[in-house]
Amino acid sequence: MGQTLKCISPIDGSVYAERQTLSRDAGFAVATAARAAQKAWAARPVQERIDLVMAGVAAVGAMNDEIVPELAHMMGRPVRYGGEFGGFNERSSYMAEIAETALADIEVGNDSNFKRYIKRVPHGVVFIVAPWNYPYMTAINTLAPALIAGNTVVLKHATQTLLVGERMAAAFQSAGVPAEVFQNVFLDHDTTSALIAARAFDFVNFTGSVGGGQAMERAAAGTFTGVGTELGGKDPGYVMEDADLDAAVDTLIDGAMFNAGQCCCGIERIYVHESLYDDFVAKAVEIVKGYKLGNPLDEATTMGPMANVRFAAEVRAQIDEAVAAGAVAHIDTMAEDDGGAYLTPQILTEVTHEMRVMRDESFGPVVGIMKVSSDAEAIALMNDSEFGLTASLWTRDLDRAIRIGDEIETGTVFLNRADYLDPSLCWTGCKNTGRGGGLSVIGYQNLTRPKSYHLKKVAG
Image (cartoon, rainbow, N blue to C red; front, side, top):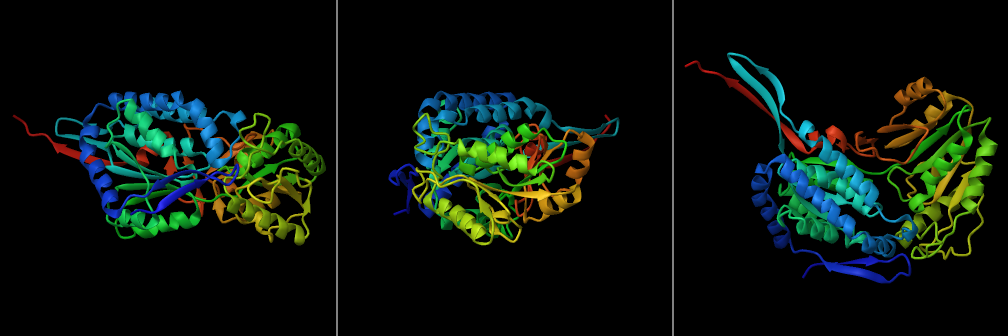
């Protein structure tokens, strides 16, 4: 008998959905079926795979009216924001558009003596472990290019968003993707580790905590199975003296607070030049005071609960510790704050890097704002982190931004924007954020392996 996985709704603490995990034998049977189906799938023309994947994407879109309230129940995002299909479709469409070029042979030479080229061939079976915060968009980042490249896929989704993988698999299979080519599974940690350790998969893509990524790498140790990870973040914003102040405040505070702060590339710390600092803080506080915390099924709600009571407890602890150490909290506790999943969004000033709220990942609706006097000070503070996913710079001087960006230890440098994933760029990180890269042409390179052909021609 497997373990029972339960999705506890942050709306009211009730059990919204539950599923049984597969036994060890059943888990291995899934991987075996995926491997048996892979060669035939890879033998199909690229355009046929593209068409089937995009039909699956469209089938997910057709479910959107059901998906939006389902997401509110599972992880608390307000229904007013309409789900994730826009980004889901944008990312898969772009990867479909570049597939033929990205997967094309690399011609090295073809003369009277030799034909030489490099092919991109699929790994085989790709295992995707997806997170709950943007459950559809994070999964499609790897799913679409993996399938298009000729891999088969086994998807394991987070317990908090238990129903997402089922919906995606049902949609893709309804569109004609064979059942063994894309399978959704419910697995416990031990079975997951056993499958990876037994080389049941040829590539593992994991998005989640640093501890979870370490567990994936430990399971794969010695197997030579590729592991791509996107783990924690503590993304900074830096507002320079010549920035468009209103645009900077609006974008950075939205980047810090949207989805109750539960964004992989959410803004978690902001450094503002001393000449703009007071105005920035005043405008930021005004924005946050205007949020409506409440039930995500209510169209008037602009901020729902955090996805889980324990996630909110960690954010409260970081805030309380910071205030006890001298930080100033600017937002009074909202009436809807229940001490559980419903958490008042908070802006903190007088913060330092000795405080956990400026060092540890918060992944919730809190941001610390610090005053700086120079680029050198801001760069040092931005780099004073174990993480490196994105950094958001605000200035009218493009060359200055590039110079600063070159000095920041990060995966993506934004200028005058934040918290956006462009599928034409590689989504990647450094330090404890993990390694590897998704989307763009590099996403295809990571989901395939190079195979060289050195062919000597024989006359006659």
